[in-house]
Length: 288
Length: 217
Image 1 (tube, one colour):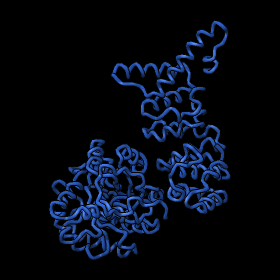
Image 2 (cartoon, chains in turn purple, blue; image 1 turned 30 degrees about the vertical axis):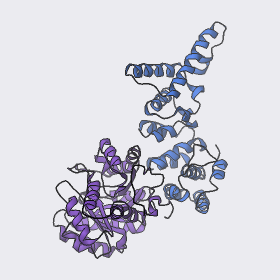
Image 3 (cartoon, one colour; image 1 turned 180 degrees about the horizontal axis):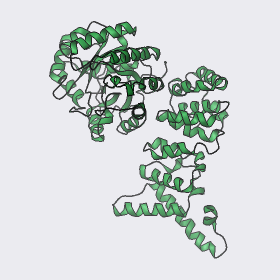
Image 4 (tube, helix red, strand yellow; image 1 turned 30 degrees about the horizontal axis):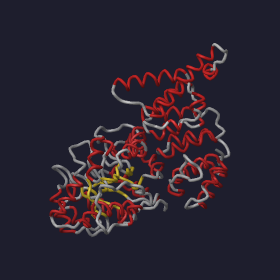
């Protein structure tokens, strides 16, 4: 089972995790820029963090045979701190980097006017840099947050197929299903989604435009829940090809829209692939 | 290494017109290098260049972009390094010996050698490392041994290796031995060569020749 985790915060994880992930079949990850638990107080703190996302962390991942890409943004929570707003001016520099494959995580935390502004400004950056966007949906007042996010996305003019709405669940998937956006689900030990609930959603809504991630970070989370979800799919009667689509080809297709996803020379030994594979495991460099 | 050699090795890249236009533009409007530099990897590829061992296409293209600047090489090299991802930083380090910057790039070497990214450490020890002071250079060589960077990447290794480096390597060998571990073979070989030098110098001293201390001078 080859696995591409489209949302995982490896900066917060140990090398033990990289080892276990590689053993479980994880060969590629996307690490979105987010909140670090401790609020930051100045743009320089973000610059060092973004540098790490395009410097040290890909090196660390590479030592375990895992290809690392990133998304970069001012997250919704810290968009509310005026001291962090100048981070928006730093972003264009990072959105030019080879391994940055989307703008994200953007969206809402508490749905404030400051979040409105940062969200719209960063969707405009995604359009300007020809990059997809990763939209975090809020944990509180989630359904209204998803509706409002969809309205902002529509207003921005970005093509819906270049947007993923993340952290969806049984309730919010219905709001997003027919918008043309991609649908992201974070599988957690006890919050957000679980593997059995994810399987039910896939049964009801199909595998198209579905992204499954562990969103593992510094909180209670598990980087192997992507694998657990794949196994739960097989037990429930999905085919290996279905699993490959959800856990590999879908994230390759979504982030491949950046023109920057580089999965060449990955060692897929030990990962039993279904016969009908997708050419996208060697997305060519080039494009924008 | 010369810009012409880089240019020749890059003839087969996927998008040679992009590179030619970028070089032209950088010569005319230096600030445009800030957008071309990060894009060079996806435009020119990242494969090893068959005609230029030790260089990848993105590194060579970025080095060439730096050489195309009409002026302010040191300022741009520093800014592109400080704002670069790991691949861009590596390219700046490898370009330094081609640029008219004197010793101005030394702080970038110090920065790269402080990291634990072995690709950056290796790139900092090319020909431009002749500007590194002996103490910093020896520490960097020892760091290569520690982190498994092949000593073949170190420019002028034998010419520059001195008694002090030999003492540091011997101490590391002793620590490794005590721990039941070994040194990489290239480090053992270097230590053997330095020890042999020392022995022959001691023997030669009676005859008036002192190769090792000449080298240390």
